[in-house]
Length: 344
Image 1 (cartoon, rainbow, N blue to C red):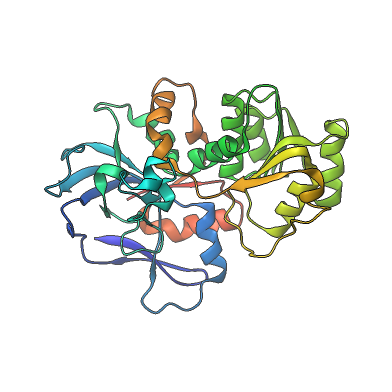
Image 2 (image 1 turned 120 degrees about the horizontal axis):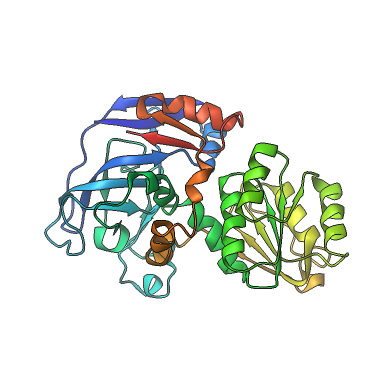
């Protein structure tokens, strides 16, 4: 079968690899029908060191079940399923608490022996990981359903962890697909004022369609000043940080309201960050966020896509076959594309 591997920064190739096999009775083998390139894939695209064996890429998928292990009970061959970016058994103490990305037996597809930018995928702990969608679902809904494997529910996770609710003022930092998804989620949760911080008009226009009431193109101190102006000097109740770089974090604590919450879902590209008096402590601000617990949200989100309540698939603005995925990486890295849909 064909699969995507990255060998060093910028070196993305589609090569022939062995087909996945059932390695445990709880596994399933999925034929991938929809995958995509994620903004977080661009981090290794920028800085992966030489990796002679290659790193398997991809962590978002919709596909059709081809084989199941003898212990799999919730899936059937022929089911179309959504596969979250992390696998989880669904039974451990952390899964029962809804923190499925910390499953004792779990892991992440990206960089693993099984990854989603490929023709087929082995799904460990299939009962606890993959979720079937109704037979006969309109093919036009598949891009939106694919966003439930990561990008939309990552934005939703940011909003949930941040405590977004009716009447709150929310600022979203980042106009990538996750930031736009956070705007859509904040609107679904009833936020009154939603300030999107981004400077790419095509993206911020979609952000307005998703529910942003204001757009701030300025960055750094100018961006902070603009948000404070919009909020009457008070700042935002909730800041959803969807970038992961230090300037975004600094902007976040500059605009959060005293007593407010910063919720980060942009994978942080740093370990050390300010938490002292002038950043968080003095404001009695809360810092939260983390990898989205997609599996905990899936059953609630699927009906919203099926009935048209949300259309998060609008974040996809390009579609390419698997063999052209290197071009998808290039398009996203150069910001010529917001998010690239891949059809294996």
